[in-house]
Image 1 (cartoon, rainbow, N blue to C red):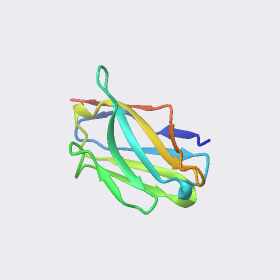
Image 2 (image 1 turned 135 degrees about the horizontal axis):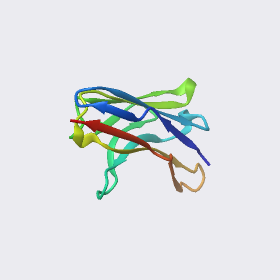
Image 3 (image 1 turned 60 degrees about the vertical axis):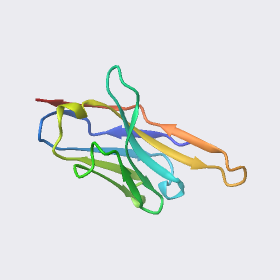
Image 4 (image 1 turned 90 degrees about the vertical axis):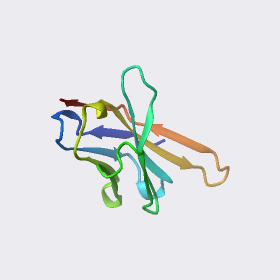
Length: 121
C-alpha cells in the first residue's frame, strides 16, 4: 500500500507559477511510474505528466513547454513545476503511482486526495 499526499495548490493569476509536491509513504525508487492527473468540473480526469523510475517523462500536449515533472528519490517526492499558468489549467490535481507486484505482475494504482489549482484571468 502506497499513500500519496499532495501539497502546493492554490490560487494564482494567469501567467504565474506553482509547484505541486507529492510525498509518498514508501520509497519511490521501487515505483514503476508516478504522474500527475487533473480533473476540471464536468470533465474527465486527464493525464498531465508522468515520470518513470528511470526518469523518462511524458506530457500532455496542452502543458508541454510549461510544466515540468521531476522526482527526488531520497525525499520520496515527485514535483510538478507549473509555469505560464492559464485559466484552463484550473482543476483538482491528483498524484498517481503505479506499481507492479514482483511475482504476480499485478498492477496497483494509488491516488492522492487531490489539491486544487485555480488560475484567475
